[in-house]
Amino acid sequence: MSLPVRIGVQLQPQHAPDYSLIRDAVLRAEDAGVDIVFNWDHFFPLYGDSDGAHFECWTMLGAWAEQTSRVEIGALVTCNSYRNPELLADMARTVDHISGGRLILSLGSGWFKRDYDEYGYDFGTKGSRLDDLGRSLPRITDRLSKLNPQPVRDIPLLIGGGGERKTLRHVAQYADIWHAFVDVDGYRHKSAVLADHCADVGRDPATIERSAEIRFETDDTPSDERVSTMLRFADDITAEGVTLLTVATGGPDYDLTAAQALVRWRDARAN
Image 1 (spheres, helix red, strand yellow):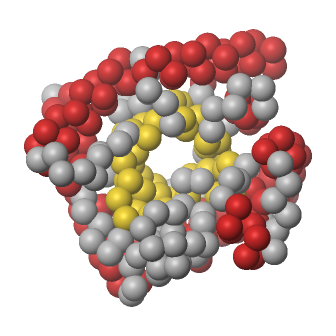
Image 2 (cartoon, helix red, strand yellow; image 1 turned 180 degrees about the vertical axis):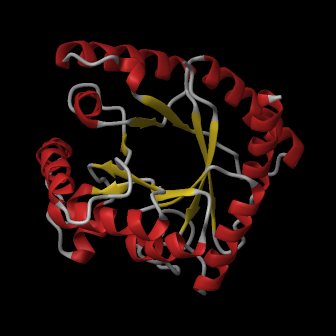
C-alpha cells in the first residue's frame, strides 16, 4: 500500500532576533496544513550573516511539543556528534511524551565545522563521523527500549544523507525514513544503492519511507514562476516514490509561500 504524500517545512532557527518570530511561524505552519515542522541542529547561521541571531534545536522542540497539537515535529537533522546517544534517546522520549507521540527522531553524522570548533567537539573526518553515527544508532535504540515510561509510540527514525558506502547502510539497518538532497536521477541511483544494502541486511526497501528536500529558490524570479518550478519537481520526485517533501524557510520573516503552495498541491492530488 502506498503512503500518502506529506509536506514538511523546516523553520531554520536563524536570523530571528526574538524567539516570538519562530513561535509565530510554527503557529502559521500548523494552521497552513503542513504535516511536519522541522528545525535544524546548528549553533550558527548557515547563510546570511554568519554571526547573526540563532537558537538551539532541542530545547526549541520541547517548546514546539507544547505549542502544537497536530503536526509532527523534529530536527532536520540532529547532529550525532553533539550529544551522548543515551541522553539523546531520553531527550527524544521526553519530547515524544510532551507532544503526545508526534516526534520524529532525525539523525545525521554532522558536517558544519564551525559548530564543532566553537563548541569544543572533535570534528574528525567524514568517515570517522559516519562511523560514530553507526556506533550510536544501536545505543539509541537500546536505550529507547529501556526507558520508563516507554515512548508514546515507536518513534520514527529518520536518517539524512546519501553516502553510498556508510550512510545508506545505516539507513538500511535502522531508518524508518530516508531523507536525501537529490535530483530525480540522483534519487534513482541512490535508491538502487539503498536497495542493495537492504538486500544485504535482509530488509524490504519498501518499508523505508522516502523523503526529499524541495527547493524554493530565493532569487528575483517572480514568485508564481518559482512555485511552478517547485511543483514540477514535486510531481517528478513523487513519481519516483518519494512521499515526504520538505521546503525550508529562515528568519526573520519565515515566508511560508512555498509550504502553502505544496499543501494546496498535496490536497489537489488527494481529491
